[in-house]
Amino acid sequence: DTGVSQDPRHKITKRGQNVTFRCDPISEHNRLYWYRQTLGQGPEFLTYFQNEAQLEKSRLLSDRFSAERPKGSFSTLEIQRTEQGDSAMYLCASSPPGVWGEQFFGPGTRLTVL
Amino acid sequence: DQQVKQNSPSLSVQEGRISILNCDYTNSMFDYFLWYKKYPAEGPTFLISISSIKDKNEDGRFTVFLNKSAKHLSLHIVPSQPGDSAVYFCAATNYGGSQGNLIFGKGTKLSVKP
Figure (tube, chains in turn green, blue):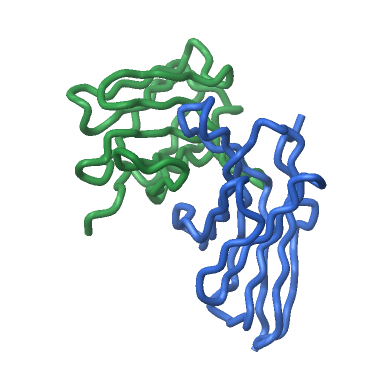
């Protein structure tokens, strides 16, 4: 399977704990996006990488959130001191050079904060 | 404020008939629009897109129409098939000004009945 993969698929944590999610984009895709989707809503943009550079962050991305993409390959999204409001599906997407708009999404990581 | 609006949460259509999904946007800077389809437990999958320089784009059974003056687009599926049953998201972006991050509507759940 050469699609976008995300790990883990599900995460249950207690409030106050830190969690980290991983996204492996499609090989050769230089752009990588993180989105968050809550029930009844569409995906909301969180942050964007071009290669290893984080070029844009939404104001939704509070100080407790940090994302990295070392070496321009896989990416991690960490949430520190989780809150119940962080419960959501976290989606990763990638797109190849020279292609605007169309993004290839992974299956998402569902986070539940108790 | 919601920049991309899908005002119909659900739509039910008989197999073989036409499905019409609607989307409105408020930001006049948007110049590229996409439709994504999402099955349960999967990430969104790109379906079809349209640039603001066009008013129609067709791909097999799927056609997207754009009315810039009304800030409205629609997705036509004909003939509809049971496998088309999914949540459909309308998304928009500013091709020239953004890094490609997509603004999504809340989605419309399409049910195609045999």
